[in-house]
Image (cartoon, rainbow, N blue to C red; front, side, top):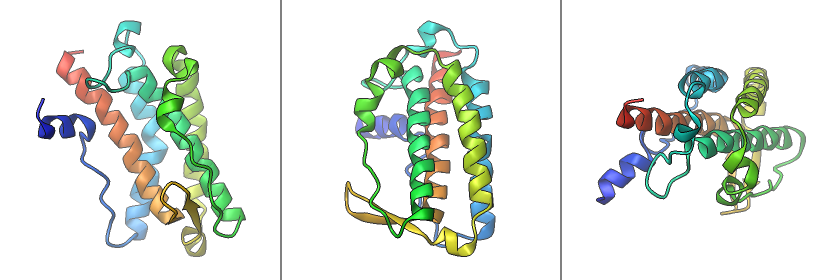
Length: 180
């Protein structure tokens, strides 16, 4: 497989593009995407068979089951990171090895329904919290230790909206490719 084809499989909606400005319209749109993610995901995966859930979205990629559980792991960390940024002064957040988490027994074998339910509650809370943020709150920051980079909460809103859409596209592209 050539690099271009692999890149399209890895990033079916492209890599995250940082907006020039984080306008209210942009943030409201991204919060709505975060809010609707669990329902959009559930619509795509609820009736997949166990064999389909065990299918990787690309060669050497995660299975659909792992992608679903990864979204819960990642977005749970997002929620905690925002809470830290809101309650502490520019905290250094905890890095986690998402690839290692994806290989844990629960991510490899657990049914998806509990995770879909978890995502519904988590995303309700994320959207509820994000919709309540003031201009000052949106500017609050945390430091990611992986590269010692500072992130503003408003940046995280865009990033995690993209993240959900990115992994949903892995699933929808595979379903289309397989004719499911």
